[in-house]
Amino acid sequence: MTGDQPSYLQPSAVIGGGTGAVKFSATQTSGSGATADEPAPTTHGQADPSSGGLRSDDDLSSVGHVSPGEAGSAPTGHVGRGEAVLTWAVRGPQCEAVLTWSDTEPDDDASVGPLADAVAGELIRLRSELESNSPPIQVLLVADHRGASVHPLPETAANAAGLTEVRDLFELRRPLPVERDHPARDMAPPLAPRAFRPGYDDDAWLRINNRAFATHPDQGRETPSTLESRMAEPWFDAADFLVLDDLDRPDELSGFCWTKVEIDDTANPGPGSGEIYVIAVDPAHHGEGLGAALVLAGLDHMTERGVTTATLYVDETNTAARSLYNRLGFVVHHRRRVRTTPMEPVTQ
Image 1 (cartoon, rainbow, N blue to C red):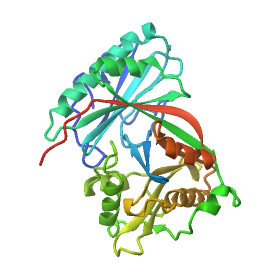
Image 2 (spheres, helix red, strand yellow; image 1 turned 90 degrees about the vertical axis):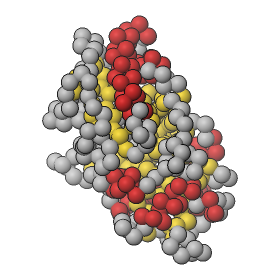
Image 3 (spheres, rainbow, N blue to C red; image 1 turned 90 degrees about the horizontal axis):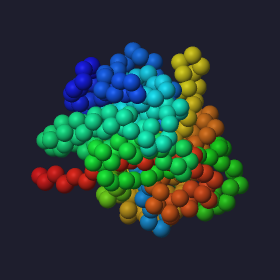
């Protein structure tokens, strides 16, 4: 994808959407296309930022995510001093635009001004094309910030581009394995989860997911095509997608814990990072302790796969879920801020 006016809806490896990347620098602030043949950048922020938020009733009920273009599916560009990369992926009704910047980028408002203006211009063009689509596609700007601090580059760009809504998520981490005598195990009911069966469990998963995430800003609008796009990602393995059959309702699920285990590299294949990608309990089973039990099942599964550190994302405002994760030994690693603008629901 090249040129100063890229089209954001070109076909790509992401099913049902488009991907692309634009590199900005302090000396050349106009957008320029980057290609998939260029090496992946070394940046502040992740190449595959799957973010997540957590809803809770009286126990853990669900965790959702914003999933921009996965590593390998979207082009990237070089990153150096005074440079930033905006990488976007369109999937379903949303476009996640991920902003990464070099670790040496100054963190004062005056220094980031020209670069922020260039990023904002690209976001404005992105919004102009996608929000005028039928149906409209919502643009989200995703940026990772170290600890509790917030870097001014994405904030300045988001403000200039009119992305007024703010949602903060924390990436939490804990070492694996979870101790066999951990107190949380005594409170969790015994479960018998099994692996997801593509083509067989699809409809049941869509039903429970959309019930559990009915009011969630990201996860509650799953369709067969969005599920297909997730399963087409190179990291997908059905064995890592744990589901729990509902014993009272045939062909329904009472909960699931979708974990994501990635390989470090092709030269040294083996488990790399492990993440609780999406997790939910059907609303009909809230209050039964299934949420904590499913978290433990996912952590134990990743341990069996050789993962030594588990991650997940939780909404900053979800104090109930954060309390549960704290009891399970998770600690905050960094903040992920999502900036967007409200859109009117599409009427049928």
